Image (cartoon, rainbow, N blue to C red; front, side, top):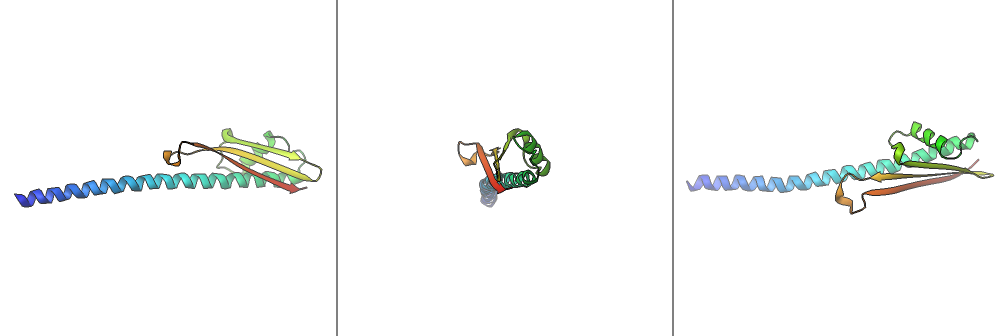
Length: 126
C-alpha cells in the first residue's frame, strides 16, 4: 500500500513541476512573439519611409499625407492603415519624409504602456 501512495505522490509532483514550467514557457513564447511583431513593424515602417522617399525624389506630385500613405501601404503590407501617419515635405533641394505608427502589444509583459509610438524619418536630396 505504501508503494502505490509513493508512486501517486511522485506522479502528482511531476504534474505540478510540468505545470509550473509550462506556464513559464508559454509566457516566454508570448513575449517573444510580441517582440518579434514589434521589430517587424519597426522595420516595415522604415521600409515604407524609404519607399516613399524614393518615389518623392522623382515625382513632385507626392506631397502632403494622403498620396504618400497610399503609396507606403501599397509597397509595405505589414502596417495597419488606421495607425499610420506619413507626411512628405519638399524644400528647394531636399525631400523629407516623416512617419509615425502606433504599435499595440498583445501581452501585458512590457509594463503599463500597451501602445508604443514608432517614428521614422528620412531626408534625401532631390
